[in-house]
Image 1 (cartoon, rainbow, N blue to C red):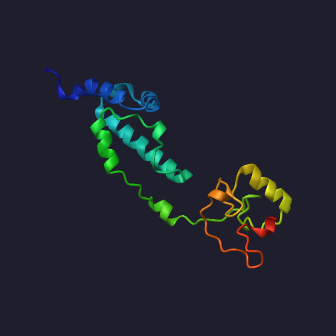
Image 2 (image 1 turned 180 degrees about the vertical axis):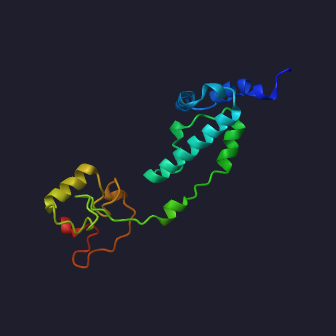
Image 3 (image 1 turned 45 degrees about the vertical axis):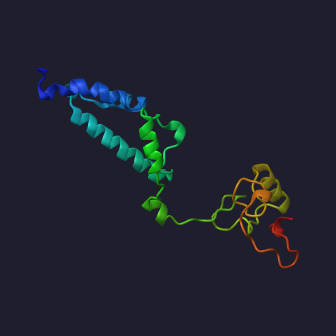
Length: 168
């Protein structure tokens, strides 16, 4: 074609930039050096740095490693999409495996006591918060009704109720 190998970047970079999300393209143009405009290595180095930065931020903020479906760019090839669905695995990251889960009181957000042991609010205020937030009376952790709760709790020895009697 009569183009020197050092000039391939002028052809490849626009093609590569069209495949990236808009915010990455803007950031690349903001950071690029005017003398390295056609350097493919600079673009690949930038992409690698951005991916590592975003992964680190997700881990630090405790976000899931999986990207929500609505923020993904749709694949251009349907066979690629079918192939990806066959091999989709959700393995936890090492940070998820070593995280210590703390029980936080749903009423006052304190980690010094459980929700059942909260003495800051009256029982009436606790019931109101559960009802207002749509929190299950049985497990007090998820947002659904008690009729949908699948948590197995042993009934109270006195009244055989499956709800927390300290609230009623």
